[in-house]
Image (cartoon, rainbow, N blue to C red; front, side, top):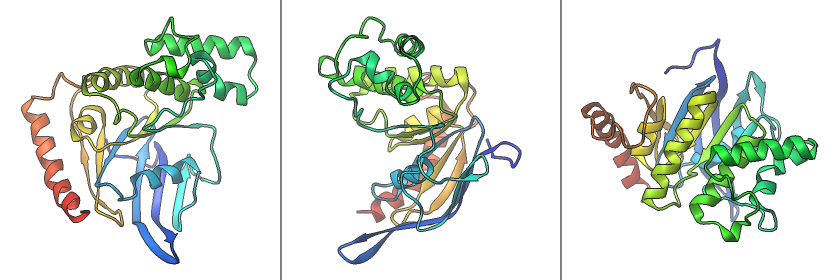
Length: 263
């Protein structure tokens, strides 16, 4: 699903970044350029330390690039954008808040009234399979349930863009499959623009419209592969399909050398 100028949502334009560590400059990203279309689901794979999370932090406005430019809807990113939702590998729920209050937190920051924000939070907890757990605290929930609360919280403010940094990576295999399918079902409903970082090639192929393969640090885009599988999809439905396996083999051929180089 190539991006077009008319539908372009996010533009990464010759972005490079380095961190200063113990007085020396450590390059993390090197001249990265790509576009993400409105409503597109882009997955990013690459070896550990290649700058995938750093790139998400730039799109979110948490950090500026050392050089280059990041734009959303044609405007340069300058600070936190409330129209962007960010979900991390760990849920980071507030332990003193119930599930309902955690989901409603962003709406509270937007100064929405109690009734509308609780209505929205209840709707999202139901959508993510947590009806009946509105009054539960994080320490009363399994890790999978906590990630569902985190997903509901990310969706609560109805962001235009979703940044997902290995959101299901810490879960056991069975729970991961369930949440991946639930997220795809929710995404199919609204088709928000998504950048999804993962180490799981199966996950990337099953979910994304395109998969970008990053090189070892400093991260560069090695290739971008279109995933021409029909939608709606399931994480298990097409995994043993011959074309799915062809896509996996193609991506792994690109990625495996970078994984070895990063050691």
